[in-house]
Figure 1 (cartoon, rainbow, N blue to C red):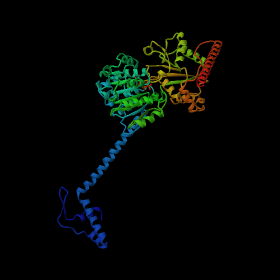
Figure 2: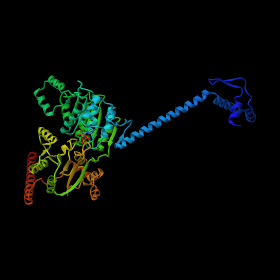
Figure 3: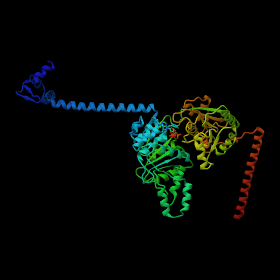
Figure 4: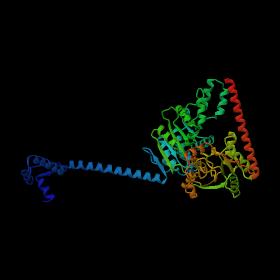
Length: 566
Ligand SMILES: Nc1ncnc2c1ncn2[C@@H]1O[C@H](COP(=O)(O)OP(=O)(O)OP(=O)(O)O)[C@@H](O)[C@H]1O
């Protein structure tokens, strides 16, 4: 008996309406079942009957059939939805991999592919295009959608990869336009040069919005306060006049303004606090920036305050601080952590000793350079010494360091940007963030004090997709960081002698000591050997005399103290 026969037997006498309900004229005797009933015990009979009913219902009632199929359909749609979501996730991950973006955090929005995907006002997109940007850089692709959602982030991307615009675009979108609510965004930078540059970029990207930027230099502010003496009413007027929307400055200046009595600025309406070159700020002094940051955070007491940190290099101290202080933190890293940009061809050049450096730099210049060129030295004294040497070599050279006045520093930067200065000698001051268009060559005259310092110095070339070159001089005294810097160079795809990679790892203590105080080096001066020896002897004698007079003074003081005690 096949299924059709069973169906016929079971439905004998039944009439089917169009709607699918069953009208039974007479109950058909079901022989098959009767037999089964007779053979089985009582409880089985019951269950068989119900089974029979179930079967007949399943077979005849269209209602039940629908119920089952809708459940199935729901499972199907759920499955399809799940499949669609997984596919989308995979696509997003693939896109992130293509752009070398890695993310850590929850509910991270899709990276934007174009500026139009940013979902920001059209004028901001127009401004981005006016700057000559065609498509977002990887850090912009991921950081902008995140910050637009108000997420706190720690962004790490190579030097010259457009981190500034990555945090400026969401801030401009969030603030919309000028308001008399006081500061609504703060951007902290380690140097005034970088703060000025960030402000320039902000002005370009917010063109047409007329934001006001603060604040006056602390010196100017101090002078104005003196003029006003202690007239509280004047201070209030002054404070109101300097109200602006975005404050782009160094932490020192903000803390100075906060320390005034009453505080010269109010930060209670701050929506975004951005810390650029975060690892640099965290490394300054013995907890210097940590204390300043807690002071600033205490002043930013509004509910909507969010923090974003950006840098090309990453230190565990920054990450730890972020994990503890930034709720819902998302970490975005582009490329490999703490690696130099692969747009720069890097070279290590053994020069023997200090005299070798001067010969090598002159050799490079004589061989022909394509300005602009940056030369890094370890101290302001050495910057001045090298400047004194190169000024007579027939090239337009200048030096910038912290001993020069702000006006001199501004003019030097301006001349270099405009191409009047070909070679700029600088200290670590210019290693972070400063964006000179098209620097072709970076010369590390003095070996960097750490791999991180190396990454930032070299990163002044090879920006915004352009290629550049970096030459790093080293002498027999520069072995402490040679291994780690050689590894950085190798990682970014350049050749290094294999012996450097297998050098002994320097103890952390020694590396830290070097980071704090640069090694002593011979003076940068072109003198014949006999003159240099004479000069060395004279200098030795001088230092010995100084030591002697110090000890004599100390003894005299101790004797006086003894007499007084008696
Ligand atoms: N989407 C873009 N397309 C092309 N160029 C861009 C784009 N975004 C920014 N730039 C340019 O790239 C250069 C470097 O940008 P920026 O100074 O923001 O880099 P950075 O990542 O902050 O570098 P650093 O770590 O050294 O501070 C700038 O000249 C900037 O104008």
